[in-house]
Length: 358
Image (cartoon, one colour):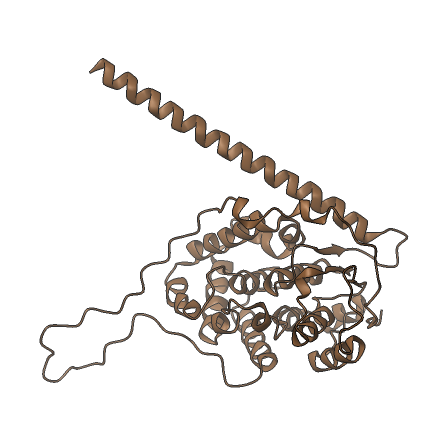
């Protein structure tokens, strides 16, 4: 199926969208694995006259090669795919795609984000998988609907992987981090993070030609998407409060990325509008869900996996699913808070009883 480029269909606004996305301050944060202090090494009081070897720093930045973000993303994806195949990772593309996705979504952003590479690479394979699982849990508490859609590339972190697969995971993590993944995805500015579509390069690189032909999956080059988006957006004067975008053959969201970047160039915040993406392939839809979180597309974003030609309103289905998942999250938060309160009360009572008995 050829990719449709006209994605600017107007849809009625939904006044109840915001109720599905409570403010971040109300969401409980699952505890992530502690990141060790990256303080500089302690220097000796009197240096030796002729040191045999030069001391190594405790943290490295692993910079991105000097090129455009698109080229850097392509290079990182190529390294990941090559490493996965050289380590005989097999046909499970969900593992390397999900690994790169979780590392890209790693929540500690900012100038020092690349310094976390040394800590992550210092973990053994099983601890690394647990860390990635905690990253998905972190994002589930914020966007359960998008993480639910990304489940095809995240679910493997809950499996009991073989030693061979664990070794392949460790090798791919080392390859992408040392080639600058945490630098490419370490900015706290969504504008920077949306400069490239790493998920597209990963999925395209891992997909066989036969699968691409069967799915009709041909990702539009980013430069072409950028040109089309700027031409159709114009000066942005036609964007009103009820503006919304529907992409029925979204892939990983390449056209949406270009339109969002064109809006930012015109000082228009894309997070203020509705975005609905649909794709037939679960892996591509999962990549689109990851990108919607990574690119800061806002609380009114929905992603659906299904046939856009079917006689169903995917936007309505996605909104219903979104409401159910946020309700589930609220029930889980309430249950966790109740369990914590009961446990605290039991400890207080036990302390009083022990004090009286003494």
